[in-house]
Image (cartoon, rainbow over all chains, first blue to last red; front, side):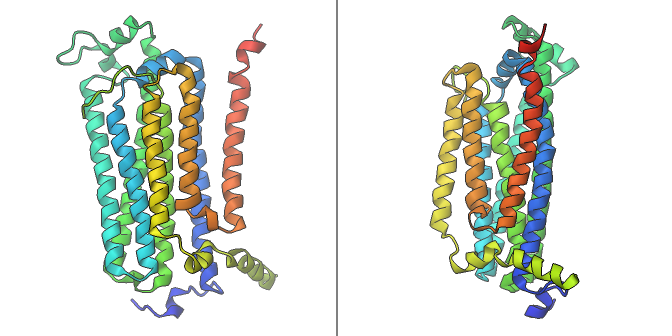
Length: 238
Length: 116
Protein backbone atom coordinates (compact mmCIF):
# COMPACT_ATOMS: atom_id res chain seq x y z
CA UNK A 1 0.00 0.00 0.00
CA UNK A 2 1.52 3.25 -1.14
CA UNK A 3 1.42 6.14 1.29
CA UNK A 4 2.51 9.12 -0.81
CA UNK A 5 0.15 12.09 -0.93
CA UNK A 6 -0.87 11.58 -4.59
CA UNK A 7 -2.36 8.17 -3.81
CA UNK A 8 -4.20 9.55 -0.74
CA UNK A 9 -5.95 12.21 -2.86
CA UNK A 10 -8.48 10.53 -5.19
CA UNK A 11 -8.31 11.68 -8.82
CA UNK A 12 -11.79 13.24 -8.83
CA UNK A 13 -11.00 15.74 -6.05
CA UNK A 14 -9.06 18.96 -6.38
CA UNK A 15 -7.77 19.20 -2.84
CA UNK A 16 -7.45 17.06 0.28
CA UNK A 17 -9.87 19.39 2.13
CA UNK A 18 -12.49 18.80 -0.57
CA UNK A 19 -12.04 15.02 -0.31
CA UNK A 20 -12.25 15.04 3.49
CA UNK A 21 -15.25 17.40 3.42
CA UNK A 22 -17.06 15.04 1.03
CA UNK A 23 -16.43 12.05 3.31
CA UNK A 24 -17.89 13.93 6.30
CA UNK A 25 -20.81 15.23 4.26
CA UNK A 26 -21.71 11.69 3.15
CA UNK A 27 -21.84 10.49 6.75
CA UNK A 28 -23.89 13.49 7.92
CA UNK A 29 -26.43 12.84 5.14
CA UNK A 30 -26.61 9.19 6.16
CA UNK A 31 -27.18 10.24 9.78
CA UNK A 32 -30.15 12.40 8.73
CA UNK A 33 -31.77 9.29 7.21
CA UNK A 34 -30.98 7.50 10.49
CA UNK A 35 -32.68 10.26 12.49
CA UNK A 36 -35.84 9.72 10.46
CA UNK A 37 -35.46 5.94 10.71
CA UNK A 38 -35.41 6.13 14.52
CA UNK A 39 -37.93 9.00 14.34
CA UNK A 40 -40.62 6.66 13.01
CA UNK A 41 -40.45 4.40 16.05
CA UNK A 42 -40.13 7.36 18.45
CA UNK A 43 -43.28 8.94 17.02
CA UNK A 44 -45.16 5.63 17.31
CA UNK A 45 -44.05 5.42 20.96
CA UNK A 46 -45.33 8.98 21.50
CA UNK A 47 -48.76 8.12 20.09
CA UNK A 48 -49.19 5.04 22.30
CA UNK A 49 -47.82 6.81 25.36
CA UNK A 50 -50.43 9.55 24.92
CA UNK A 51 -53.10 6.84 24.74
CA UNK A 52 -51.88 4.65 27.64
CA UNK A 53 -49.80 6.84 29.98
CA UNK A 54 -50.36 4.81 33.21
CA UNK A 55 -49.44 1.49 31.59
CA UNK A 56 -46.23 2.94 30.10
CA UNK A 57 -45.14 4.40 33.45
CA UNK A 58 -45.89 1.21 35.38
CA UNK A 59 -44.05 -0.95 32.82
CA UNK A 60 -41.05 1.41 32.72
CA UNK A 61 -40.57 1.05 36.48
CA UNK A 62 -39.91 -2.69 35.94
CA UNK A 63 -36.79 -2.04 33.85
CA UNK A 64 -33.31 -2.23 35.37
CA UNK A 65 -32.15 1.36 35.81
CA UNK A 66 -28.76 0.30 37.24
CA UNK A 67 -27.80 -1.55 34.06
CA UNK A 68 -29.11 1.40 31.99
CA UNK A 69 -26.87 3.78 33.99
CA UNK A 70 -23.78 1.59 33.67
CA UNK A 71 -24.41 1.18 29.93
CA UNK A 72 -24.84 4.95 29.50
CA UNK A 73 -21.45 5.52 31.11
CA UNK A 74 -19.82 2.76 29.02
CA UNK A 75 -21.18 4.20 25.79
CA UNK A 76 -20.28 7.78 26.69
CA UNK A 77 -16.74 6.68 27.60
CA UNK A 78 -16.46 4.90 24.24
CA UNK A 79 -17.43 8.18 22.56
CA UNK A 80 -14.54 9.84 24.38
CA UNK A 81 -12.04 7.12 23.49
CA UNK A 82 -12.92 7.20 19.77
CA UNK A 83 -12.32 10.97 19.88
CA UNK A 84 -8.86 10.24 21.32
CA UNK A 85 -8.37 7.78 18.44
CA UNK A 86 -9.00 10.61 15.92
CA UNK A 87 -6.43 12.75 17.70
CA UNK A 88 -3.86 9.94 17.67
CA UNK A 89 -4.44 9.35 13.96
CA UNK A 90 -4.25 13.06 13.16
CA UNK A 91 -0.96 13.32 15.00
CA UNK A 92 0.37 10.17 13.31
CA UNK A 93 0.62 8.20 16.56
CA UNK A 94 -0.09 4.71 15.21
CA UNK A 95 0.24 2.77 18.48
CA UNK A 96 -2.08 5.21 20.31
CA UNK A 97 -4.62 4.96 17.49
CA UNK A 98 -4.70 1.16 17.73
CA UNK A 99 -4.95 1.30 21.54
CA UNK A 100 -7.87 3.76 21.58
CA UNK A 101 -9.73 1.79 18.90
CA UNK A 102 -9.34 -1.38 20.96
CA UNK A 103 -10.53 0.37 24.13
CA UNK A 104 -13.60 1.64 22.21
CA UNK A 105 -14.40 -1.88 20.98
CA UNK A 106 -13.94 -3.29 24.50
CA UNK A 107 -16.35 -0.71 25.98
CA UNK A 108 -18.92 -1.46 23.27
CA UNK A 109 -18.67 -5.21 23.93
CA UNK A 110 -19.08 -4.55 27.67
CA UNK A 111 -22.26 -2.59 26.82
CA UNK A 112 -23.60 -5.55 24.85
CA UNK A 113 -22.67 -7.88 27.73
CA UNK A 114 -24.74 -5.85 30.20
CA UNK A 115 -27.57 -5.58 27.67
CA UNK A 116 -27.58 -9.37 27.21
CA UNK A 117 -27.70 -9.79 30.99
CA UNK A 118 -30.66 -7.41 31.10
CA UNK A 119 -32.52 -9.26 28.33
CA UNK A 120 -31.90 -12.51 30.23
CA UNK A 121 -33.33 -10.99 33.44
CA UNK A 122 -36.39 -9.79 31.51
CA UNK A 123 -36.81 -13.29 30.11
CA UNK A 124 -36.56 -14.83 33.62
CA UNK A 125 -39.20 -12.36 34.87
CA UNK A 126 -41.43 -13.16 31.86
CA UNK A 127 -41.53 -9.50 30.82
CA UNK A 128 -42.13 -10.52 27.22
CA UNK A 129 -45.30 -9.76 25.20
CA UNK A 130 -47.34 -12.86 24.43
CA UNK A 131 -47.92 -16.18 26.22
CA UNK A 132 -45.08 -15.77 28.71
CA UNK A 133 -46.67 -12.62 30.10
CA UNK A 134 -49.57 -14.79 31.32
CA UNK A 135 -47.48 -17.56 32.93
CA UNK A 136 -45.91 -17.57 36.41
CA UNK A 137 -42.12 -17.00 36.45
CA UNK A 138 -39.95 -19.38 38.51
CA UNK A 139 -39.98 -18.46 42.22
CA UNK A 140 -42.91 -16.04 41.82
CA UNK A 141 -46.55 -16.32 42.83
CA UNK A 142 -48.18 -14.19 40.15
CA UNK A 143 -47.89 -13.76 36.40
CA UNK A 144 -46.66 -10.34 35.19
CA UNK A 145 -50.18 -9.77 33.80
CA UNK A 146 -51.77 -10.35 37.24
CA UNK A 147 -49.19 -8.12 38.91
CA UNK A 148 -50.07 -5.20 36.63
CA UNK A 149 -53.80 -5.86 36.92
CA UNK A 150 -53.49 -5.56 40.71
CA UNK A 151 -52.03 -2.11 40.18
CA UNK A 152 -55.04 -1.23 38.05
CA UNK A 153 -53.10 -1.23 34.79
CA UNK A 154 -54.29 -2.99 31.65
CA UNK A 155 -51.76 -5.79 30.86
CA UNK A 156 -52.42 -5.47 27.11
CA UNK A 157 -51.16 -1.90 27.19
CA UNK A 158 -48.13 -2.93 29.29
CA UNK A 159 -47.23 -5.49 26.63
CA UNK A 160 -47.30 -2.70 24.04
CA UNK A 161 -44.66 -0.87 26.10
CA UNK A 162 -42.48 -3.99 26.15
CA UNK A 163 -42.95 -4.37 22.39
CA UNK A 164 -41.51 -0.85 22.01
CA UNK A 165 -38.76 -1.64 24.53
CA UNK A 166 -37.56 -4.68 22.57
CA UNK A 167 -37.89 -3.01 19.14
CA UNK A 168 -36.10 0.20 20.18
CA UNK A 169 -33.30 -1.41 22.19
CA UNK A 170 -32.99 -4.18 19.57
CA UNK A 171 -32.59 -1.61 16.80
CA UNK A 172 -29.99 0.17 18.93
CA UNK A 173 -28.10 -3.08 19.58
CA UNK A 174 -28.09 -3.73 15.82
CA UNK A 175 -26.49 -0.32 15.29
CA UNK A 176 -23.96 -1.11 18.03
CA UNK A 177 -22.96 -4.36 16.28
CA UNK A 178 -22.52 -2.53 12.96
CA UNK A 179 -20.46 0.13 14.78
CA UNK A 180 -18.22 -2.47 16.42
CA UNK A 181 -17.67 -4.00 12.97
CA UNK A 182 -16.69 -0.60 11.53
CA UNK A 183 -14.27 0.16 14.37
CA UNK A 184 -12.79 -3.36 14.09
CA UNK A 185 -12.25 -2.64 10.38
CA UNK A 186 -10.45 0.61 11.28
CA UNK A 187 -8.27 -1.41 13.67
CA UNK A 188 -7.37 -3.89 10.90
CA UNK A 189 -6.52 -0.96 8.60
CA UNK A 190 -4.43 0.60 11.38
CA UNK A 191 -2.57 -2.72 11.84
CA UNK A 192 -1.83 -2.69 8.08
CA UNK A 193 -0.36 0.80 8.46
CA UNK A 194 -3.14 2.40 6.38
CA UNK A 195 -3.18 5.46 8.64
CA UNK A 196 0.52 6.02 8.16
CA UNK A 197 -0.55 9.06 6.11
CA UNK A 198 -2.09 11.52 8.66
CA UNK A 199 -4.64 12.81 6.08
CA UNK A 200 -6.46 9.49 6.36
CA UNK A 201 -7.50 10.30 9.93
CA UNK A 202 -10.76 11.51 8.35
CA UNK A 203 -11.95 7.89 8.03
CA UNK A 204 -11.62 7.50 11.81
CA UNK A 205 -13.52 10.77 12.21
CA UNK A 206 -16.33 9.74 9.85
CA UNK A 207 -16.77 6.45 11.76
CA UNK A 208 -16.78 8.39 15.03
CA UNK A 209 -19.73 10.49 13.73
CA UNK A 210 -21.75 7.29 13.40
CA UNK A 211 -20.59 6.09 16.82
CA UNK A 212 -21.59 9.34 18.55
CA UNK A 213 -24.98 9.11 16.85
CA UNK A 214 -25.51 5.62 18.32
CA UNK A 215 -24.55 7.06 21.72
CA UNK A 216 -27.01 9.92 21.25
CA UNK A 217 -29.90 7.57 20.41
CA UNK A 218 -29.15 5.64 23.61
CA UNK A 219 -29.67 8.78 25.71
CA UNK A 220 -33.15 9.18 24.21
CA UNK A 221 -33.92 5.50 24.84
CA UNK A 222 -32.94 5.93 28.50
CA UNK A 223 -35.22 8.98 28.74
CA UNK A 224 -38.24 7.29 27.17
CA UNK A 225 -37.89 3.70 28.36
CA UNK A 226 -35.83 3.44 31.55
CA UNK A 227 -36.44 6.59 33.55
CA UNK A 228 -40.03 7.24 32.43
CA UNK A 229 -41.63 5.44 35.40
CA UNK A 230 -41.49 6.51 39.04
CA UNK A 231 -39.51 4.30 41.40
CA UNK A 232 -39.72 4.11 45.18
CA UNK A 233 -36.31 2.61 45.88
CA UNK A 234 -33.10 1.78 44.05
CA UNK A 235 -32.66 -1.90 43.20
CA UNK A 236 -29.00 -2.90 43.31
CA UNK A 237 -29.09 -6.00 41.19
CA UNK A 238 -27.49 -6.78 37.87
CA UNK B 1 -20.62 23.88 -16.58
CA UNK B 2 -18.46 21.14 -15.17
CA UNK B 3 -15.80 23.65 -14.27
CA UNK B 4 -18.36 25.82 -12.49
CA UNK B 5 -19.70 22.85 -10.55
CA UNK B 6 -16.20 21.88 -9.52
CA UNK B 7 -15.39 25.31 -8.18
CA UNK B 8 -18.68 25.52 -6.26
CA UNK B 9 -18.21 22.19 -4.53
CA UNK B 10 -14.62 23.11 -3.84
CA UNK B 11 -15.77 26.36 -2.28
CA UNK B 12 -18.30 24.58 -0.10
CA UNK B 13 -15.82 22.08 1.24
CA UNK B 14 -12.94 24.49 1.54
CA UNK B 15 -13.98 25.55 5.01
CA UNK B 16 -14.13 21.94 6.16
CA UNK B 17 -13.99 21.37 9.89
CA UNK B 18 -10.55 19.90 9.83
CA UNK B 19 -9.02 23.04 8.29
CA UNK B 20 -9.68 24.76 11.55
CA UNK B 21 -9.24 21.55 13.45
CA UNK B 22 -5.64 21.19 12.38
CA UNK B 23 -4.93 24.76 13.46
CA UNK B 24 -6.68 24.66 16.81
CA UNK B 25 -7.65 21.09 17.65
CA UNK B 26 -9.66 20.92 20.89
CA UNK B 27 -7.47 19.58 23.67
CA UNK B 28 -8.08 16.26 25.44
CA UNK B 29 -8.87 18.27 28.59
CA UNK B 30 -11.77 20.05 26.89
CA UNK B 31 -13.20 16.71 25.71
CA UNK B 32 -12.84 15.37 29.26
CA UNK B 33 -14.75 18.37 30.60
CA UNK B 34 -17.65 17.78 28.17
CA UNK B 35 -17.51 14.09 29.06
CA UNK B 36 -17.91 14.90 32.76
CA UNK B 37 -20.83 17.24 32.09
CA UNK B 38 -22.67 14.57 30.05
CA UNK B 39 -21.83 11.89 32.65
CA UNK B 40 -23.31 14.03 35.44
CA UNK B 41 -26.46 14.44 33.30
CA UNK B 42 -26.72 10.62 33.21
CA UNK B 43 -26.85 10.60 37.03
CA UNK B 44 -29.39 13.42 36.97
CA UNK B 45 -31.59 11.52 34.47
CA UNK B 46 -31.60 8.44 36.70
CA UNK B 47 -32.33 10.42 39.86
CA UNK B 48 -35.35 12.02 38.13
CA UNK B 49 -37.09 8.61 38.14
CA UNK B 50 -36.91 8.65 41.98
CA UNK B 51 -38.43 12.12 42.36
CA UNK B 52 -42.00 10.88 41.93
CA UNK B 53 -42.82 13.42 39.24
CA UNK B 54 -45.21 11.05 37.46
CA UNK B 55 -46.27 12.00 33.94
CA UNK B 56 -44.49 15.35 33.96
CA UNK B 57 -41.10 13.63 34.39
CA UNK B 58 -41.03 13.04 30.63
CA UNK B 59 -40.40 16.74 29.94
CA UNK B 60 -37.42 16.81 32.30
CA UNK B 61 -36.15 13.50 30.87
CA UNK B 62 -36.33 14.80 27.31
CA UNK B 63 -34.68 18.07 28.30
CA UNK B 64 -31.77 16.15 29.83
CA UNK B 65 -31.47 13.79 26.81
CA UNK B 66 -31.69 16.79 24.46
CA UNK B 67 -28.89 18.57 26.32
CA UNK B 68 -26.73 15.44 26.25
CA UNK B 69 -27.36 15.01 22.50
CA UNK B 70 -26.62 18.71 21.80
CA UNK B 71 -23.32 18.54 23.69
CA UNK B 72 -22.35 15.39 21.78
CA UNK B 73 -23.19 16.90 18.39
CA UNK B 74 -21.65 20.31 19.10
CA UNK B 75 -18.37 19.17 20.67
CA UNK B 76 -17.76 15.47 20.00
CA UNK B 77 -19.12 15.53 16.44
CA UNK B 78 -17.33 18.85 15.82
CA UNK B 79 -20.40 20.78 14.73
CA UNK B 80 -18.81 23.72 16.56
CA UNK B 81 -16.14 24.04 13.85
CA UNK B 82 -18.13 22.54 10.96
CA UNK B 83 -18.89 24.34 7.69
CA UNK B 84 -22.28 25.87 6.84
CA UNK B 85 -23.30 22.90 4.71
CA UNK B 86 -23.06 20.56 7.73
CA UNK B 87 -25.16 22.99 9.78
CA UNK B 88 -27.71 22.99 6.95
CA UNK B 89 -27.87 19.18 6.98
CA UNK B 90 -28.30 19.05 10.77
CA UNK B 91 -30.98 21.76 10.51
CA UNK B 92 -32.77 19.81 7.74
CA UNK B 93 -32.76 16.66 9.89
CA UNK B 94 -34.25 18.54 12.83
CA UNK B 95 -36.82 20.19 10.58
CA UNK B 96 -38.04 16.86 9.16
CA UNK B 97 -38.28 15.28 12.62
CA UNK B 98 -40.17 18.40 13.73
CA UNK B 99 -42.70 17.89 10.89
CA UNK B 100 -43.04 14.20 11.80
CA UNK B 101 -43.88 14.98 15.43
CA UNK B 102 -45.96 18.13 14.96
CA UNK B 103 -48.26 16.62 12.35
CA UNK B 104 -48.81 13.56 14.53
CA UNK B 105 -49.41 15.60 17.67
CA UNK B 106 -51.97 17.87 16.00
CA UNK B 107 -54.16 14.76 15.95
CA UNK B 108 -53.30 12.97 19.20
CA UNK B 109 -53.15 16.03 21.47
CA UNK B 110 -56.32 17.67 20.18
CA UNK B 111 -58.48 14.58 19.65
CA UNK B 112 -60.21 14.83 23.04
CA UNK B 113 -60.87 18.56 22.57
CA UNK B 114 -62.31 18.18 19.08
CA UNK B 115 -64.33 15.01 19.77
CA UNK B 116 -68.08 15.41 19.83
